[in-house]
Length: 93
Image 1 (cartoon, rainbow, N blue to C red):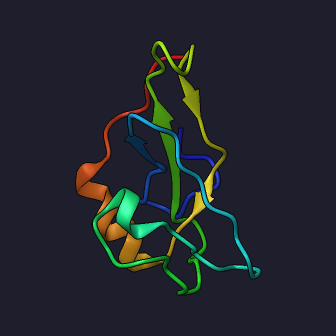
Image 2: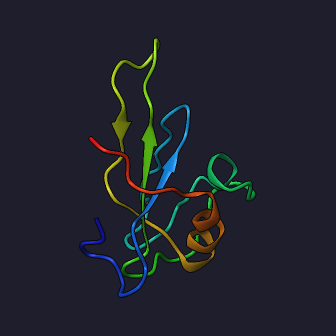
């Protein structure tokens, strides 16, 4: 699923045990929680770039129930590049 993404830049799907999300506290901001996703420091304050998108998938389990997935989360180029090697294909839903 790459709808709304930049040409040649797929939506990233990142599996995490616990589902962490972040809010955009300013329009167009990346706001990636870097420590939870790709080992960066703090929260990214760079501007998000059009078409660089992430969805975080939690497989579910005894504490969470069924698998869960975030809405599309916009990223800046640096966070997208850092997360891309950690991402996998979309999971069947």
